[in-house]
Amino acid sequence: MRLENKVALITGAGAGIGRASALAMAREGATVIVADIKSDKVDACLAEIETAGGTATGIVADMAKLDEIDQMVSSVVEQHGKLDVIFNNAGVTRRCKLMDIDEELWDWVHDVNAKGVFFCMKRAAETMIKQGHGSIINTASIAGRGYPGTSNVAYAASKGAVIAMTMQAARSLGRYNINVNSICPGVTKTELMQGILELRHQKDGTPIEDLEAQAAHGIPIGRINEASDIAEMAVFLASSAARNITGQSINVDGGLIML
Ligand SMILES: NC(=O)c1ccc[n+]([C@@H]2O[C@H](COP(=O)([O-])OP(=O)(O)OC[C@H]3O[C@@H](n4cnc5c(N)ncnc54)[C@H](O)[C@@H]3O)[C@@H](O)[C@H]2O)c1
Image (cartoon, rainbow, N blue to C red; front, side, top):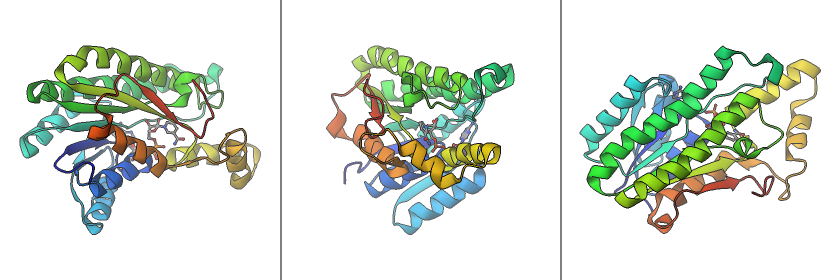
């Protein structure tokens, strides 16, 4: 098992990519901490991991709130004595045209996707520096690399921020044996994507299957991601096999964006 004896904290682990990653990391032997803003989702994910024979505990926390991030990391370290992996995956968006973006949407997206990710990295790094190792994984997006199908400009900017923070944090934390990388998912079948497709369906009546086919169009490999495609990359980056990889943002998108 690739993550045996590792303690891995995953944010936004109640659904989609985070949930798939929690299941995958538990399967690989990690003790997983499932963190999410929604308690029912935390409970459901914990039950799934336990049924599959894995080990996990849950925390309800909002990644837009610094005091909740502090408490989350403190309680993990108190309970488990260490933190080997943090996967800063929680993220939000909704479809919105540039001219309709207001301050409320900008702040909502940036508080979770950019500010939350930074303070999770900083808080986790305090423990990782003391213990002399750690792996920080962030969820960015191909939206941060100019993907034209992005849900909105504020979201693209928040993911560009994650890519930039990943490089700078990797430079600062490498001397402490801490790896910092991010994953840039392409179009991925999750609740987030489902919500975006349903809005488009409501607007112009295009059937969901057609919208899914449109999303797959132009992907060189010819298919959109399952959440498990991203989970596999997260497991790899969390494992010792990735010990010399840092500062990278890796696209998992079937070849949609090639930079
Ligand atoms: N689905 C895609 O196509 C896609 C593509 C590129 C990047 N991403 C990124 O992947 C990550 C996961 O997306 P997903 O598609 O699995 O989303 P999702 O909506 O299916 O799941 C996200 C989870 O995060 C939780 N969450 C939301 N706000 C939170 C907060 N403030 N604090 C803690 N938890 C919170 C939700 O309750 C949910 O359980 C996000 O960062 C997203 O931007 C997704």
